[in-house]
Image (cartoon, rainbow, N blue to C red):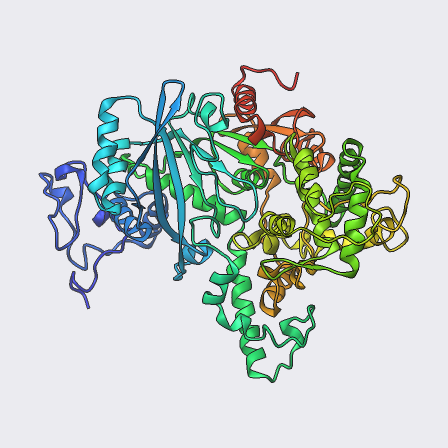
Length: 639
């Protein structure tokens, strides 16, 4: 077959590329307008002979095509990508008066992104998920206000198209992207959980430097395609076939059932699929989602030579787990945000997970003792509560059980804001039905109000990812896999001999010298053994264990790449707030990463004990301004 129809040039062929004299600088394919040229040398080659090149010439062109694409090809690619993204603004823009002579407008966006980016790169079909994000920006003139109001009667797709054209962004320099803590929690709602006044939050301060703030619900959370027990039951129904037939054994897994049983076989297959699904919800894909959002908001590049021009975010801020994601950004993206801010979020990438938790248990001990120093009367109350729950766990409204270990897990909140201790004391004060301060009765009858509050403060209804995926954030490649319930193993090592960490022992001691120590930000296998209803049952328990035992996690961090992009500040600059007394992120492990020779040695570090882990929420504007000044050179910290 030698005719032109049978031998259409490949996508990489020069045939599709525009000539310097073509009309509008744009070549089109058969079926549309073709190039019109006044130069005979620019005429399309249509015959078999004309399209035959010497092998070495073909190799040169193939190599060249990898780094160059024609305007026509870029437009076709952009059109295909737009269709796949299905970008839409789902509701009319909302205006908010913020004070400080400032009005902001919030637009709510959805785009459709691949569940598995690696399959997309290999040109395989991948399921797609919805990712939600909002954009907050200042309305600074009447024309802008009228434009946003005009979007009210448009379709979601039309709103998105017109927004992009109106914004006219050819770079992302004026955008700051936020990566929230977690894993497993949706982002704050602008003006509700996040003030937009200049001194009211980090976001209000950021609007003095950036035109747009992008807040994303990380995949699996918030309004993005969510992961809850309810959605997992719909997506992987066979995973739950064995729930309710475990013969009152709260530890039973799918693997413990007879493999010849049809239900067990189906459950096992579903477990593999669900595990694979959950592995796509980590920082590596979260970062790719952030990049996809940026690209969706920018106008197509206008360069004529086909070279890819970097268009990174102007800045990004990562709080807690969001800081871990920021380190993945610096590790895996060639051009990460120009300014990278981390607050309480330096991933302890150089410390084995078990060793990390062994150190964190000591930090939790110190925080527990600080609490009892402030409220010494609670030592006896906590002991009474624990002794009661060891013999008679209380049934919660959700169907879960308030056991002694679940009660102690309330200590998770002790690493928060300055009012945390007072709030915790107030909660414990409502636990007992008896109002007598000198009640000698060892047994506690719990108030219904207390049990309801426990349910609401420790719910996995909306964010089981926190339980299922928490330790996976430390699974940095096969050498750091599996995590295998590292916090639980570290605890068991502490209590294998009589220890102050053993609440079964300390609750029986009359002396206030040995109070019951609380737990911290950790997950345990017993959480799925009936304590928390939403993560219990054979299906959820098996899924959690499968992820804990996964021995081939992909890499999240690349020390050499971090050094490269931060080397001289020409690609990215980074500044971090590290909290000396942080109960959740070990200070010493952070310092290993940031010391001279470490992966983040070029990141400017501000060490402070003015704040706990929640510093960004408690004093966000001051912390943001400090880090911004450090990164841009106007504040000399470290000194």
